[in-house]
Amino acid sequence: MATCRECNDDVEKLVSVKVAGKARKVCEDCADRLREANEVAAESEGVVQRMMEFKGRR
Image (tube, rainbow, N blue to C red):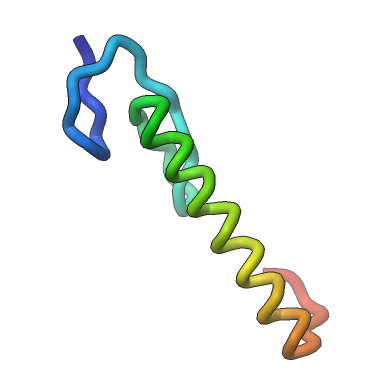
């Protein structure tokens, strides 16, 4: 059995997800939550950049 590094539960299968440029091995439930949080953060950053008329790249 493998252990999820996010929730510390024993799971059968771990999934690799990139968070802040680093790959993390987490269970599927945690991977979904991390993906959603990453999408929300990217969208909110885009909204702020459009609001401030930022034309550059990160």
